[in-house]
Length: 96
Image (cartoon, rainbow, N blue to C red; front, side, top):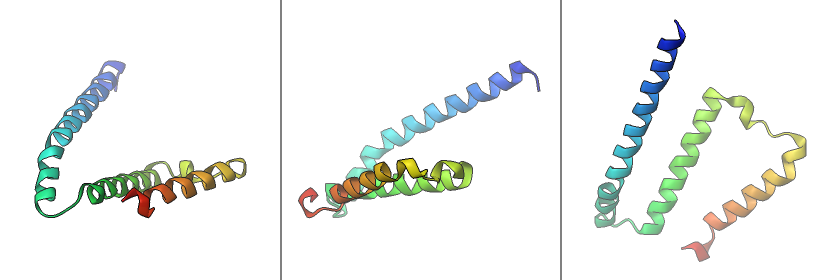
Protein backbone atom coordinates (compact mmCIF):
# COMPACT_ATOMS: atom_id res chain seq x y z
CA UNK A 1 0.00 0.00 0.00
CA UNK A 2 1.50 3.33 -1.01
CA UNK A 3 1.14 6.63 0.82
CA UNK A 4 -1.63 7.89 -1.48
CA UNK A 5 -3.85 4.89 -0.79
CA UNK A 6 -3.10 5.17 2.94
CA UNK A 7 -4.24 8.82 3.03
CA UNK A 8 -7.36 8.01 0.99
CA UNK A 9 -8.45 5.31 3.46
CA UNK A 10 -8.09 7.67 6.42
CA UNK A 11 -9.93 10.47 4.60
CA UNK A 12 -12.83 8.12 3.83
CA UNK A 13 -12.95 7.02 7.46
CA UNK A 14 -13.00 10.66 8.59
CA UNK A 15 -15.90 11.47 6.28
CA UNK A 16 -17.76 8.43 7.59
CA UNK A 17 -17.27 9.62 11.18
CA UNK A 18 -18.54 13.11 10.33
CA UNK A 19 -21.65 11.81 8.55
CA UNK A 20 -22.35 9.33 11.37
CA UNK A 21 -22.05 12.08 13.98
CA UNK A 22 -24.41 14.35 12.02
CA UNK A 23 -27.02 11.60 11.62
CA UNK A 24 -26.88 10.67 15.30
CA UNK A 25 -27.01 14.32 16.40
CA UNK A 26 -29.96 15.04 14.10
CA UNK A 27 -31.89 11.95 15.14
CA UNK A 28 -31.28 12.56 18.83
CA UNK A 29 -34.00 15.20 19.09
CA UNK A 30 -36.69 13.02 17.55
CA UNK A 31 -35.66 10.04 19.65
CA UNK A 32 -35.68 12.18 22.80
CA UNK A 33 -39.16 13.45 22.02
CA UNK A 34 -40.33 9.87 21.52
CA UNK A 35 -38.90 8.92 24.93
CA UNK A 36 -40.40 11.99 26.62
CA UNK A 37 -43.83 11.11 25.22
CA UNK A 38 -43.29 7.60 26.60
CA UNK A 39 -42.86 8.93 30.13
CA UNK A 40 -39.09 9.30 30.49
CA UNK A 41 -38.06 12.45 32.37
CA UNK A 42 -35.22 14.66 31.11
CA UNK A 43 -33.11 13.67 34.14
CA UNK A 44 -33.56 9.97 33.37
CA UNK A 45 -32.60 10.56 29.75
CA UNK A 46 -29.45 12.43 30.74
CA UNK A 47 -28.47 9.63 33.11
CA UNK A 48 -29.15 7.06 30.39
CA UNK A 49 -27.00 8.94 27.89
CA UNK A 50 -24.12 9.30 30.35
CA UNK A 51 -24.29 5.64 31.35
CA UNK A 52 -24.34 4.44 27.73
CA UNK A 53 -21.44 6.74 26.81
CA UNK A 54 -19.35 5.62 29.79
CA UNK A 55 -20.07 1.95 29.13
CA UNK A 56 -19.26 2.27 25.44
CA UNK A 57 -16.02 4.11 26.17
CA UNK A 58 -15.02 1.51 28.75
CA UNK A 59 -15.71 -1.40 26.37
CA UNK A 60 -13.85 0.31 23.54
CA UNK A 61 -10.83 0.95 25.76
CA UNK A 62 -10.98 -2.60 27.12
CA UNK A 63 -10.88 -4.12 23.64
CA UNK A 64 -8.71 -1.62 21.73
CA UNK A 65 -6.39 0.10 24.25
CA UNK A 66 -6.37 -1.84 27.55
CA UNK A 67 -3.12 -0.18 28.67
CA UNK A 68 -5.02 3.08 29.07
CA UNK A 69 -7.15 1.48 31.78
CA UNK A 70 -4.13 0.77 33.99
CA UNK A 71 -3.92 3.32 36.80
CA UNK A 72 -0.39 4.23 37.81
CA UNK A 73 0.37 4.61 41.51
CA UNK A 74 1.08 8.35 41.16
CA UNK A 75 -2.46 8.83 39.77
CA UNK A 76 -4.33 6.94 42.51
CA UNK A 77 -5.47 10.04 44.41
CA UNK A 78 -6.62 11.91 41.32
CA UNK A 79 -8.55 8.95 39.95
CA UNK A 80 -10.18 8.22 43.31
CA UNK A 81 -11.17 11.85 43.76
CA UNK A 82 -12.58 12.00 40.22
CA UNK A 83 -14.61 8.83 40.64
CA UNK A 84 -15.99 9.79 44.05
CA UNK A 85 -16.76 13.41 43.16
CA UNK A 86 -18.21 12.73 39.71
CA UNK A 87 -20.09 9.67 40.90
CA UNK A 88 -21.46 11.59 43.86
CA UNK A 89 -22.73 14.34 41.60
CA UNK A 90 -24.32 11.94 39.14
CA UNK A 91 -26.19 9.86 41.67
CA UNK A 92 -27.00 12.43 44.33
CA UNK A 93 -30.65 13.13 45.13
CA UNK A 94 -30.07 16.86 44.64
CA UNK A 95 -29.28 16.23 40.97
CA UNK A 96 -32.82 14.98 40.49
